[in-house]
Amino acid sequence: MVSADIQFNLRVPVKLKEKVAESAKASGRSINAEALVRLEKSFDSNLQASVHKPRRRIMLGTWNCGNEEGRSTMIEKCWKYLEDFFDRYSDYELINVETQEHGIIFWYSYPAKESDL
Image (cartoon, rainbow, N blue to C red; front, side, top):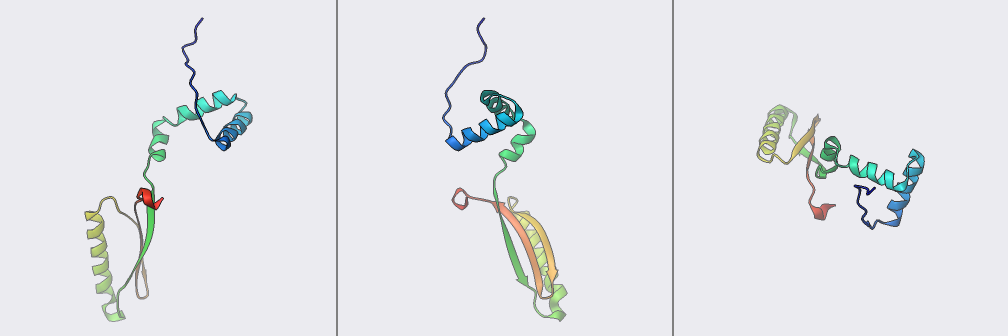
């Protein structure tokens, strides 16, 4: 009887092969079976979304809102600016905004370029 499975050679770094071997031993599988399980899981639609999600850079911004008497007006202007900015640049994501004594602090993320990684 002929098997429907095919065989192909795959080059992997030594350390990766050692990790697969350790995982196979822990799970009671052969190295081949362990590699197949892990490869099949990489095509799982739930996992695929997180694996292929682009990397993002997280940044911190500050904005000094001036003296106390104009602070609330400046915070409103800062907030409006941030809303407009993140509406215009949909690939940027506002994470958090905090008001501080003299201004605001905000965290945001944006897609990382290959040169950033």
